[in-house]
Length: 96
Image (cartoon, rainbow, N blue to C red):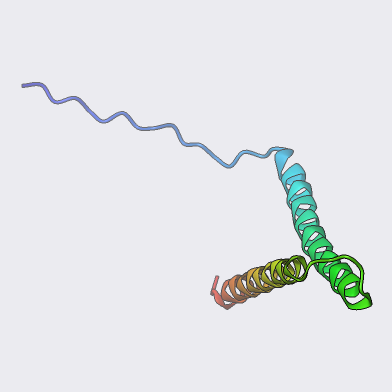
């Protein structure tokens, strides 16, 4: 019985690409877009509440749905912010 040696895998170093800058820009654009959507839902709820209060033809269930949608979006945004801060603090506590 013949035993063959193990072939070593080639060592691969970190590759430097220009995608890093593009990824940062696309992430920041994604984050900005997400925050704009949260803001838009808040403004939509505010406009519906205003229209309902002054007596325009707006159904109460539309107002409640828009308000709850805006509230959920804001709560999710706050929780994501809290997780990002928690992750950052955890990284700062790591010893190098």
